[in-house]
Image (cartoon, rainbow, N blue to C red; front, side, top):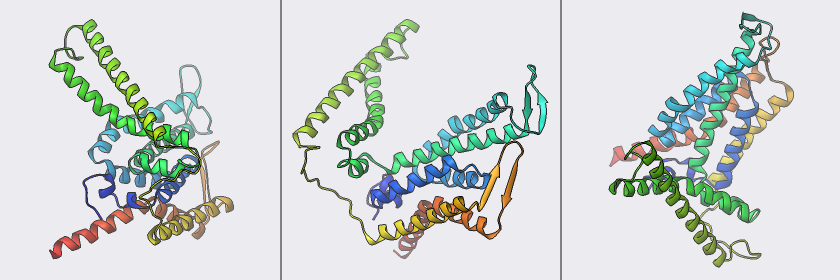
Length: 304
């Protein structure tokens, strides 16, 4: 039930068991990295960006315009300048190296893959919180899970603390917007020094607190708010079926696409269609759940 205005209250998929969340992201990120077929790339990009916009709102929109879109253009432009493979020559550089159609298309595909993975990781960071990460790996690798969970937790806290320090320094005229270039640099170093001091003290306090609670000791029990329910079981079956279909399609060659030496793709009819549909069903799983939940809430609200 949605009781708070945060990511987990907005996103229904975040309320699933941490193992379901982690398995899902492990699959979609792995597929996004290794499956370079244009259909897979397009489906994954649409699903990742849609989910990222749903989770992060304007923040994801700004990241797309300010970072991901320029990254796509730069990667697509640079690849033909360094990769000269391909049989379809379009032009020649001043040094005599050819610019090929295949290298341009592959550059666009590689850039699409890169921004898709970044978008999936932005969703991962929003859904897999530090407590979920600790729950998943706390007993297997307690020390590493503690370090990683602290690192994930400190990133937003760093930003908040940096704003607090900057505002405090601004009140006394010693922020990065005051004085000449040298004074601005000194003020910036001062703010950074305060932030690092705060971070070290906070890390020591957290480590002492966890040690005092017996974290990592053998036989130590831990309270957990996560319970694997029937709903999580159905989600696991759904994700597993989609993954099995995709892996079967990869093993049997139901889809094939190459970029070099010439661009060529093969279509095996219904087998390829089934694999593509399964891939879309997997990528759109979180948004399907959220849209269904949103529709249910609107129906309830309309009856009140």
